[in-house]
Image (cartoon, rainbow, N blue to C red; front, side, top):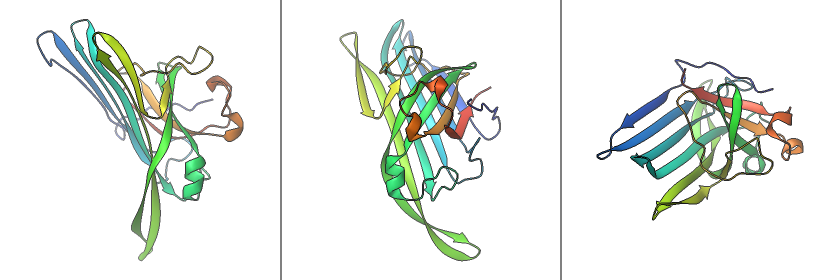
Length: 203
């Protein structure tokens, strides 16, 4: 069962709804995703952004993206090397009230090496970056979906992947989890080995 936490001071989700033109509206959510749950003290982090631009009742642009950084080695997640990170199944779960309604798959896109001091000595650490970026672009009034990196399943009640842009709301919770390979094909509610390690929301 997923562990939901209320994070107020540590996590921020900003909501902006401002006119972009006469009768237009721009809605923006920005979520910081600090460490939580199974790995609260590891040096991992992330963010999730959602934007929707509409003109009256017509949507002009809609986008969801998330970036996650995992510092190697991660003892809790069992990710020791870049090869481990490339094979890791990292997903972001979106929850409204108590119901998971969307799940996004993040792809590793980059690695960086940093020197940090541990007990006065310089130690090299590797940061791995995971990303998902999905959008709806409107062409002559019709939505055209673009998965720039990764994908999102926007209807978890229907078998298979319902590809799209999740309709984020202000009270949603975003949880980043590591899915065990043995459960990768299971329905979200039937997985028991997920390791949740980042989470953020607005309450």
